[in-house]
Amino acid sequence: GNSVTQMEGPVTLSEEAFLTINCTYTATGYPSLFWYVQYPGEGLQLLLKATKADDKGSNKGFEATYRKETTSFHLEKGSVQVSDSAVYFCALHSGGFQKLVFGTGTRLLVSP
Amino acid sequence: DTAVSQTPKYLVTQMGNDKSIKCEQNLGHDTMYWYKQDSKKFLKIMFSYNNKELIINETVPNRFSPKSPDKAHLNLHINSLELGDSAVYFCASSQNGQGTEAFFGQGTRLTVV
Image 1 (tube, chains in turn cyan, red):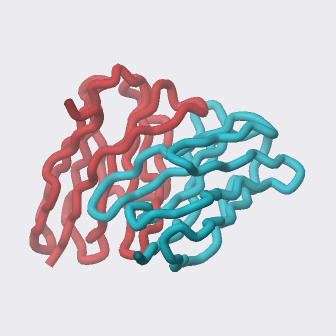
Image 2 (image 1 turned 180 degrees about the horizontal axis):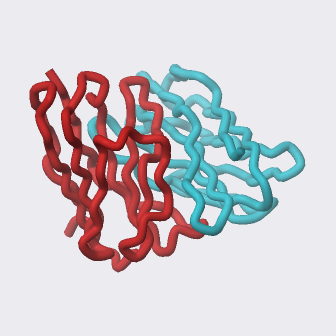
């Protein structure tokens, strides 16, 4: 079945540090890939997405590239801010009326 | 103008009670979902409806019964609540359930005591 594996957290960084959160997936066919962010006490918000191989999704300084050869969709940001502290979820959707499959989430803590 | 709204935001109730959580979306989407998030933040889908029809029904106890009176609403009724039902429940919607992103509500934190 489809699955998403994320690095375990928490990831603790100082402000302006470089961020990478790893995500790999297993899926049949050609899934769409997503990163969602959950700020404390809130619901999930779509951060970025990519729908086919080699696509790069980007938003708010975050980027992720759909790598079919390594089945990965790692999230990166060049310079994190305290306000980026949240839980980040990698997810995939394999088309049709399938469910959106989430990874376990990675908590990011950014200190001043 | 909230896109996906669910009520209540917090729900504290005793074991054995029956409770409902309501969800409405004003995005014109065809597909709606219920997810359960446990204390470790793990998200698990429970149900999915497309145009009022049940599409996905994961292995959820039959004490949980979703109801979709129209495609803009998907309510969740829970009978005989148990301590293990304590979690945050998220409603979500997507345009057609086929690879498009999902929009989430703010969540309902259910605490069973």
